[in-house]
Length: 331
Image (cartoon, rainbow, N blue to C red):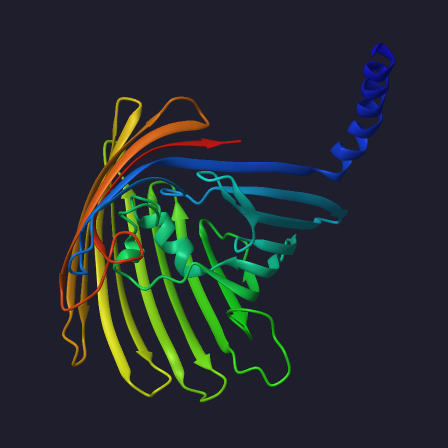
């Protein structure tokens, strides 16, 4: 037994320098708690109470690393997996898978990545574009894109620009594949308490060459110290493959404030169709999060949607009210 322990110790000492030189970091996030959903838009559907995961942030396991290539040039990678915390589910894909080169010119990244639109809403939404209060419950937010080539400029006194393009927004390209091409541009100014961002993207269908979506979003926030206020406004013009035009506008007002070591959050979101559908929806949400340490926190969030000829929901299904009480740990 003693020989085995000595052998393991020697192996660990020999492997440690190599691991350190590769500069690889293993990280993760577990988010799990109790959820209650009610007020289903489907007649006769019962309320749902369950232990679920990935509320405020998706549970994940990831690897990332950086190699210094010299002359200010660096290569980096990031690979994330979804993790089924509540049921011991298999580790799966669907998150970020990125290889990038960075230098004085900025950063050029390739792979499956967050969209500039999601980064904007994640910055401005008091709930970080997550949980039952997610601004995406009302707005049409695209979280990630496959096969994305993205460029992030250097920061000039807080101002930078992100631009991206993909020939196939979802899935792998094959010969004669009728996919969706997306290009996006997002200038952002972030300096001290001020954040202002703009996103503009266009998606085109290869088969019809139709603009299946044209989206503009603007968001801003200001942190006064005692309170942080934020707001967004967006317009969406889309066309179905059948040639039907849809247009809508969305806006959000949000606020967050420190209370002791914790933080309270609230937001109000509004949606309105601008075409013949004439649908409207409003969502209000409140929440509180309390850190137990630098890496662990507990939180409670409640959201409610009032639909008028729309099908917006707080859970990605058809429940219009939701409460989540959970714990989150990062490592």
